[in-house]
Image 1 (cartoon, one colour):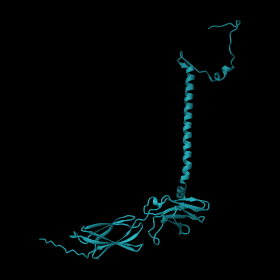
Image 2 (cartoon, helix red, strand yellow; image 1 turned 45 degrees about the vertical axis):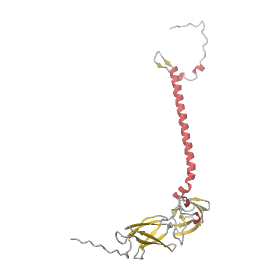
Image 3 (tube, helix red, strand yellow; image 1 turned 60 degrees about the vertical axis):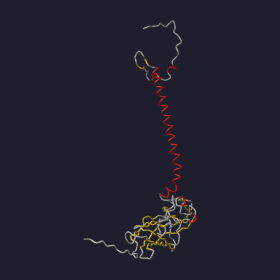
Length: 294
């Protein structure tokens, strides 16, 4: 025996399983389920978005009959903090959650160039890869002194470089560059960090590699090219000398070849040289010298 029971829908229940599906820099996708299964009519939801940084509110309305609802909250700011509340339009019980949007990326190619009495920080513009970044917003520069264990705010700039002076000998520093924070130090960009060793010894290996890689490459590449050209010319000269010696020896051997013996005949080393030049030339024979014919 069995019996079918149909529950009376209660519109005072809150939405179920509210959660974030995807969070980006300027939008967030949230998802929830209706207060009860299989609604038999359209349900009106109120989605309230509270900006915890700016202290502002926005309310959106969503009307649907689906049991599972997916909604995209747009026009958010990178690095923002938001409180999202979802409830039925009749102001029933609510479901809530907090969302933190993705901050702006860190500046690329941060490097240090050492001058006589100061250093220069250089980096690429964030506008090259972040469409939501305006150069007028600027960058913040911070410095951490590991010896003193203190962090100092150096300033803000709208340029892509920053001058740092008055560094102390024997101190190690860490510099960070990020998109300027908004509204009391919030909504900041991700920081790019670079280490710098004590003044006098120069930057550490990472800083030197970043700051002087271009100069090193400009020296090493031409040197390697000249070495390759020199080696190539040397191989060609050795090959030509080898061929010349081989041809000379072959001609010399052919000139001393005896067809009767079937081999080449060479004289001793004493017979070689300028002996022919020193021997007197025979111009003829005298009648007083007898000729012996073997």
